[in-house]
Image (cartoon, rainbow, N blue to C red):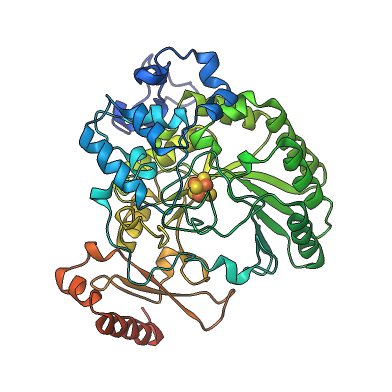
Length: 465
Ligand code: SF4
């Protein structure tokens, strides 16, 4: 202790460390893929940085025909893999579109396990039978459409689908009932850009004073022309009832180049966001990264540009088996998103989507991941794990189930603000259940009995702690 009236002499040494030094692995989120990584692929070995950053080059060289994709992969993967992918596409509900950026992020030395390949290129050998309770529009978006392409489910917000095309097509798309062109498996519900349909949607939104919040999705707003971004944005901003809206695009994750080099598009979006701020209305982007490797130096440049312009970006991840279903992978994704100023907003339990049962996992996995994320970083950068209740219940906190039987894989939710009194059922993939439950799911009478039992259990009053 210092003698009274005298200042203590502070020795010239570092302050005591209460925590052990940080291991380099703990800061993995800072190490984004650098350099001309696309040149590792023979098809892009001679592509310069200027070309690769050009959004027109990316769009022009995006692969939309299966033979072309398989041709680009020849020499990189085995013939068996090519045959497997060919057969996989023949059974897929989604059409093909993959950007060169995305193809160059896949580790082609491990194509079977690669988490990006898994999301975009189906392999027949890995496909599983659909869950017995699956239907093509699992969220029942069409039931809540007062006009085609406008879903009004929640009290104060609506989902507007102005178009049905995307910069890439994902295997797991919830809207495979509408998005992309027809496949051998699915004839699509048409949601093309159409002035009359848009006007009907705008008239409905204008006529409903309770609507304050609009999600503009698709398809993907990346595919809208700049003047269409402006038309939708300014029309909504002019409505007194609208307080906020979000442009939804997967573009940042699959083609960040557009933000950097499509000045007309990025400027149109920025002007709407700035006009919104002047009117005290919120205009943001919602995007869709699923794996930390999808975030590169190019992404960082794109998100920096949006951040400098004051455009907020939030992310919605889909929990997928083999892609991001472990705590370390999801931790890395969350930290990396925060690093590039993208708010990790939601992690969705995978919807029951046709042809992608191999990508779904159990609700328990989602609950475990939530536990592994909470406290990792600030609360506003910690995503909420949600189940988008099949049958139109909307998003439910994954923990808020009324009942969850881990052996039958059935969880039951209610949605008091959407349909009071109605029960919604979510189903774990059958192949991850105990053998006895798998056997019961194969028998329709037993399956119905399991669902009835879950319905009864969900209605029981919960024990008070
Ligand atoms: S970008 Fe979105 S809407 Fe388009 S296919 Fe992928 S998940 Fe579906």
